Length: 66
Image (cartoon, rainbow, N blue to C red):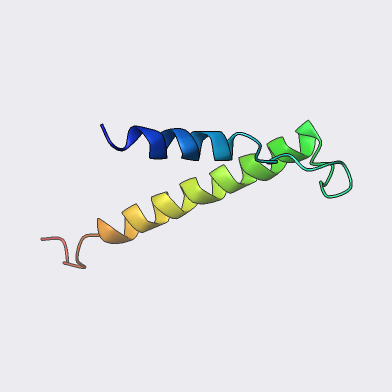
């Protein structure tokens, strides 16, 4: 139980941390439509990459039909 004072000191020291800066240092952010379009496009791109990699990895050899 010797670690309690150290844990308490760390918890009290972290309490006044300023994680959210004032408006001068923060950007406004994206509109909801822009965010939806960008992340939807990224999801579509990731899905296409998965499909392409799967198609390449599961391709059968070129054997002539008998």
